[in-house]
Length: 409
Ligand SMILES: Nc1ncnc2c1ncn2[C@@H]1O[C@H](COP(=O)(O)OP(=O)(O)OP(=O)(O)O)[C@@H](O)[C@H]1O
Image 1 (cartoon, rainbow, N blue to C red):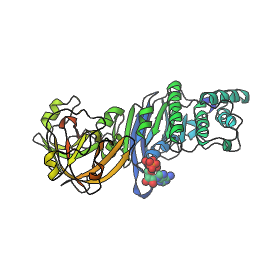
Image 2: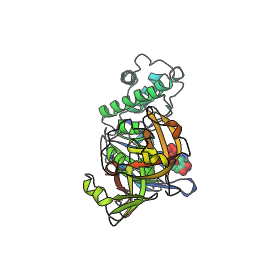
Image 3: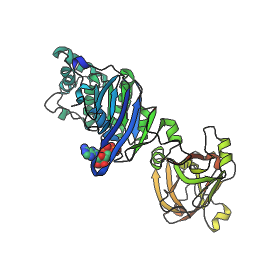
Image 4: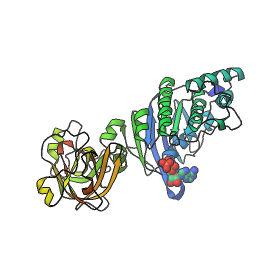
């Protein structure tokens, strides 16, 4: 059952969160992260599978014991390694992809349950439960047993049950992954609306950029149990500091190094880092050290390699063509895979001479113009990128990078 507040311990809606978490997990893995959220703020936690995102939520909800650190919700310390308030006294609800409704209670009784547990009288609890079912679009379904509700409807009941107790803090652990695309979009919009109107603070674990964008203005990237990057959603998506963050942002991140103002990377890529930095309005790096070039797949151009290269045969144009002029850089490459996208083709290529473990470079092409026969795995192509479309960002952990963040602003 999601945590409900005791009558005397109801936390103030929208309390801030300050969680310094150290939790030991199996196989010697330790999750060690400091996550903060301002009152009323929604923060997205993203990261690869097994990075420790759920563990962070569980430690905050009281479902994973702290080995060290402290969880403070509002003004109240709710857990340290030595003492821990039970989940239902923290003013926290944790909602994941399983609605976990009580099967023997109706939808209305499920919503009223949390209210009853927090001391609300029976009739008042039933009335408030009805009002909540209305709010989540389930008017008239209060008498239904959970088994007679669809997955999306059950998730709405779970949301109503969670929010009805006016939690200080809402923890959402991929709550939309079991829903179909349309229902997920509806429930996502509903969660956004309800979080905004209740003023609750929220942490949202998600694998979907759409969820992060819809629900949170700030994002924290968790990798190997640590905070790898954090910041405003847009800043992280534009300047991803790790491979995972780049994949999440759906951009290419080509790792290289800056020496004496020149950035180079495997495959003979070379760029005037000083010119990049002076043209940049957002602090592109020109200092010596590891740095990655970030570029959108739509800004990567493919032409035929070999004999046809001399004729500059285009292998497809971009759906959103409109490139700036200027010198291009790139090199010859081999097509690794061709993926069909809703609005075109994504061609992933390996640049000649790139490090064997370097991720391929993705190019998005307009399906109508893509020269499909020439774009099969193993085909040789020429990659070119307009430097004006690139952004140089420091590698995570490089001398260029800001100190590895452990504290959330
Ligand atoms: N209840 C548990 N007891 C012991 N170890 C656990 C428990 N839950 C998770 N782990 C381990 O802790 C590590 C972090 O897992 P966690 O579920 O927090 O990651 P995650 O980032 O949420 O992953 P996913 O995106 O796959 O849900 C993993 O190595 C996992 O095997």
